[in-house]
Length: 83
Image (cartoon, rainbow, N blue to C red; front, side, top):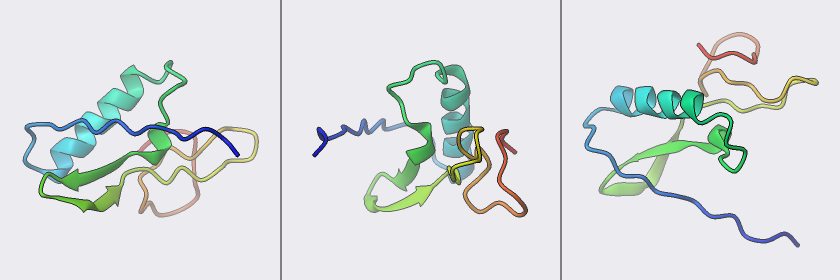
């Protein structure tokens, strides 16, 4: 049995899903060197509806190349670079 992982909930003043996705992407790119952060599991929710979460990235395992960095609902094959 492994130790429990912790989730950091980071509220913003953003009022649109697109804005929150853009910020999430910028955080992933600027903090990619921090191995303690699992950006593949990033989800977004409205402040008053935190039980309803929107997954951002596909995060499927790639053969020898890490995880897919494309949007969760992407068309075509998975890839190591974002859209």
